Length: 287
Image (tube, rainbow, N blue to C red; front, side, top):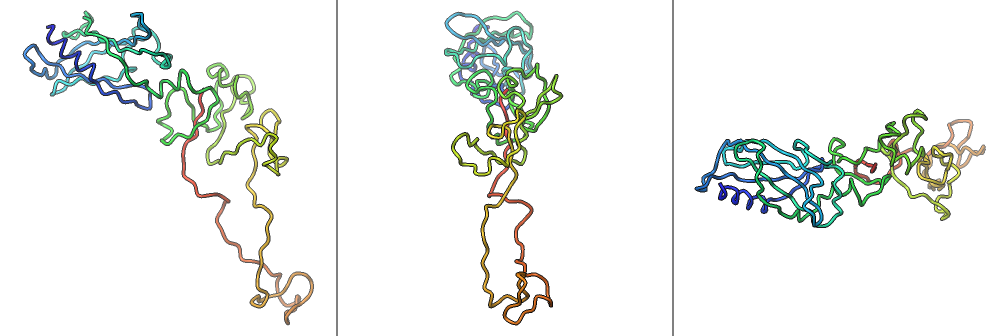
């Protein structure tokens, strides 16, 4: 039995960690018997703990009961097991010396024997963002569908959200993007289809500052204020020798009589909006 355990432990140490949008990371092992034969369709029990620091104290632990496939392989997603202690979402991945402790029951029960502890050499980036590194209120461009937004982030779609559940975000952004029902909710930024612009502050880089719609706090020169699209004032020239029609200034010219036609217009061109070349992303905000 010890030989079986040692084979499993080698697989644990050699696992390839990959991260999903829901902040789990993958674990894979091959189950073999004492003679090295693969155990296909074998049900086993596993207890996985995340250890931090020098003390052998688990900040999070969970258990799995899984059946190997035809090749003896077991695949787990750490963070999706049955929770025994701690909260996976609050694991502080900014800490050093993160370890993965593995315990095992070959009979599929809960009589676990220690296999060993191996280092988690790469910090789960998405998990780290939830606990530390990114402050509440930070907005980033997310290059995937909104259904894949990781925990700890919300889509900037203007939704009214709970003032209690998202208290840290409320403390940061207040009601600059909307007051919600003014009692229980407040609003997220609605950045769907919008281009973002840095607040002008005292730079005078926004000559039309006074045309902005104030944010929820009544401030035009702060995050949450809005401004409609516009063209900068400009002129168009034309060659009067090829113009056919009349001039709208009240006097005929080049044989044209203002009473015999309609005012001169320049043919319109363009689409339904003013925009630069662009590509879609989802803007998400940290809470």
